[in-house]
Amino acid sequence: MAEITFNNPTYLWFLLSIPLMIITHFYLLRHSKKKALKFANFETIKRVTGKGLLTKNLTVLITRTLILLFVIFGVSGSVFWYEGESNKNNFVIAIDTSASMTAEDLYPSRLEAAKDHATKFVDLLRSDAKIGLVTFSGVTFINKLPTRNRLDIKNSIEEIIIAKAGGTDIPGAIITSSNLLADSEKGKTVILITDGSSTIGRFIEDSIVESIAYAQDNHVIIHTIGTGTESEQPIGYIPKYYNISTVYNERNLQEISNLTSGRYYHAADNQKLIEAFKEISEDADKALLHTNLTPGLMLIAMVVLFIEWGLINMRFKKLP
Image (tube, helix red, strand yellow):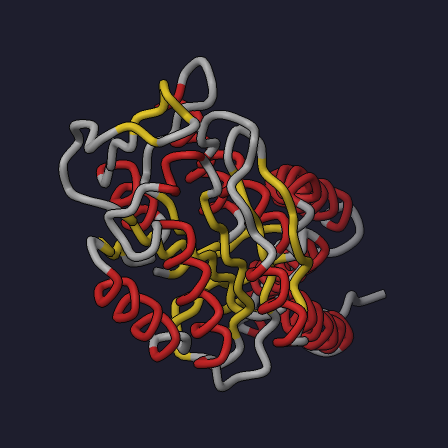
């Protein structure tokens, strides 16, 4: 995966000046030629020297076009993104705290198993990565801003409880997690732990698609960990939440991970959950890296400018 984005795309409108410059170049060249022929017999000079003194100055035109291109792309904030190996990732762990996470198909429950192994994941990371924490049910909460303090993040994980708000807002969790990583200079990775049943929003599928697109635009990799059984039929009803079904839905999670260059893990039991976190920690080198092209483009523009200046004052110098 490789692409170029622009932090200030508005400046790309200045690209329209390039055709105008080319048209102006040839118009002024034609005008200068007509004017020059009034004062000198260039045809005779050409026969004597074998060279024409009036040229189209295409070399100068090309160098000026390149200068303009490099400057425009430079001020537009060009950034080159590519998938590479790096131990410089920042993470956000997003944990579902909806009522369905109290299901006991993982011991002692989906939520408690997720908390336990998320804590172990923090210990497994060998880099100085920042880790943030988000929880979501009907609404999304930021429990901890990205930090390098491992103890703080583990304490925040331990404090997670089932939310009173109903529903599961997966799109909101994706957008909030992506925002927490927006200013990261490192790779951006979200670990989304849920049973996959998004139930918030009038148009649920549209909301998930929009949140995936948002993560893609911000170059965020999302690893999804689905907790629960494979069946999309209710596996029971939760005490104290009489009308809430613990349906497991993996299709949403597969789509989220596939479209954001992440991986989907089905944690049907505690061992699978352990393996998922371990693989993510060992694969923490995979990241979407970026390089700011602006300094290089401006330097190239300056070099070409000096070349153009040399051409004007030597080969293409005007005769009095």
